[in-house]
Image (cartoon, rainbow, N blue to C red):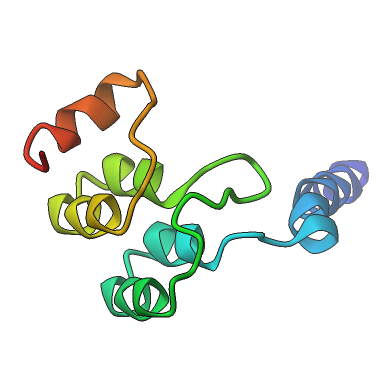
Amino acid sequence: MRTRGGIGLCVAVLALPVGVWGSASPMADAAMKGDRAALRELVAQRADVNARQGDGATAIQWAAYKDDLEMARMLVKAGSNRGWGRSQLRHILRGVT
């Protein structure tokens, strides 16, 4: 029985940052979900393409993580910051510029 309580507590603690801080980036959230339609709408609304989620992730980082060239092109065209040195990001952006 003690293990169940410990697991429940761990889940609650891990979920806390999302509930407390929420997300500061609808753009990164849409990229994380792979929702290109939402990204297009946010770009049209001139949402901040470089805004970070609570953990620091950005939309372009999600595009790289998902290996989604179409999403990366859309974000770069909208002005996404490409200044990271991560090899995965460099890999996907090779096809963008």
